[in-house]
Image 1 (tube, rainbow, N blue to C red):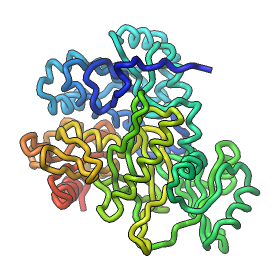
Image 2 (cartoon, rainbow, N blue to C red):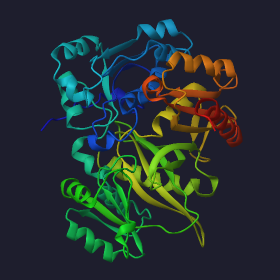
Image 3 (cartoon, rainbow, N blue to C red):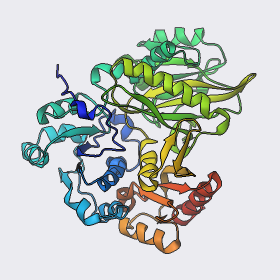
Image 4 (cartoon, rainbow, N blue to C red):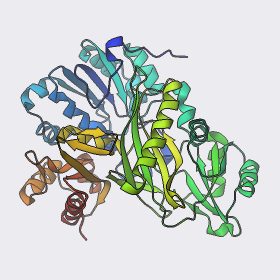
Length: 463
């Protein structure tokens, strides 16, 4: 078993969003179930989700080493440098290392098999450094051990608490409301028994390590023909095989309407300080309505404080277990007799879909999170944003990242550094081949952010 390298005392309060010195070794490897990842269009370009960390180079004591399975278009790098006060100096403190093999997945496994690239990586590390993984698996622990650097993420020995079953255990300990259900299920018989023990006509079954809702299935107890799998092409035979291998939970299907889907983003520093960073409302889609498409910040005022309070309790419970890093929590929110209730849905013990919009908004506007109001404040001005990973159009296919950025500036939907509003683009590398684009639309009000987002969608993706 690999023992992770501890952080030095001076990094006890480290946040990847606000480093003041040292080297971030960014490893955006998608060390997740490959059968589910293959269903995501342009998934290799999701390695670019962490490029917002280039914005930390505004601090002169920070260096960034960014790894990728294929070269990143130089126009994309220049785009992020355009947000910085001294792009030339930042460029001197950025090292890009690529395996130059787009089919090498996951990235970390391929990296470990390449002594030449490993030596290049070791040579690039100068002074204090830490590994920032997109997902932390045994592969990332092996890499960190080989490099003799600490990991900014939860140890794999704690990964159970990021599973659907583990989330129920942590939720119970933190006293957070949850849907009724059962965890740690491994067989079809256990699934059937749990379904009968959960109230309601429908239940939802979730794989322990499902990603973006793709491990979920909604089951109608009285008519199994109405079963809805989130992942296209899934069958009970293929699904129960995954249950046997990975485990699952069965929970009541919340029929209450209207039903809202907020989430929270939190971090735990190496010194054990747990804090909520943001709350969001998730935008979900797909055939089952369970697949993450984007988010808005902040979560609606009606239930924002309930989500923040529950997220804080969960973060503290995880800190006591030794978790370190950035992670997300998903909730259901519904109107109850005494106001709104927030029910824990799952814990995503990794960097997730709301991390890069938050990082982009925070680092471009200089805003800080106010836990009392749940707002991002840039001075006295609150900031709002709407983000998507899924602006897709055939008319985008074949265009270059540079064209996308230049078009935004020409049409007035780029970023305005004086007002600190506008769009911050991501997934630019998916545009030429897949016609897929992501962006975070930042405004000084909820209405301004939504209007900018809708306009940008029309311009790039059509009606």
